[in-house]
Image 1 (cartoon, rainbow, N blue to C red):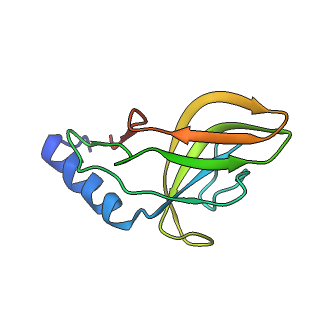
Image 2 (tube, rainbow, N blue to C red):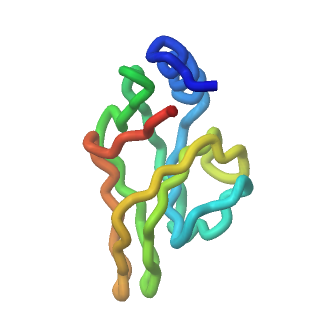
Image 3 (cartoon, one colour):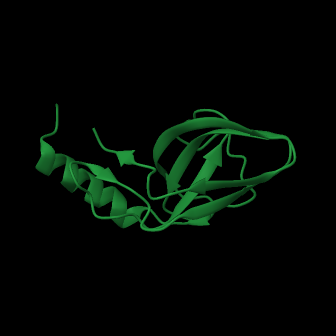
Length: 112
C-alpha cells in the first residue's frame, strides 16, 4: 500500500516520537541490530516530518573503535537494548585508527 504524503508524515511522526538514540553498523543490520560497532549509541532528536522525511535536529557524533568500517546507521528507542525502529545506508567509511561518525542535519531518514 503506497502511502500518500499525509500518511508518510503520520508514520514518520510515530517513529519520531519513539526514536531516542542512533547507532552505527558495519553492514545492514537485521531486526535485532546486528553489526553494531559504535562504542555507544548517541542521543538524537529528529525534526518534524515533511513528505515522510526527517533529519537530526542537530549534528550527532558516534565514536568508532579502531579497525572498524561503517556503512549503516540505526535509529533506536533506547540507549542499549531496546528496539531498532529504522535504518539508513550511509557512505562506506573505514576507521583504521578509530574516530567518529558525524550524523548531520543533511542525513535524511525517509519513510516510504
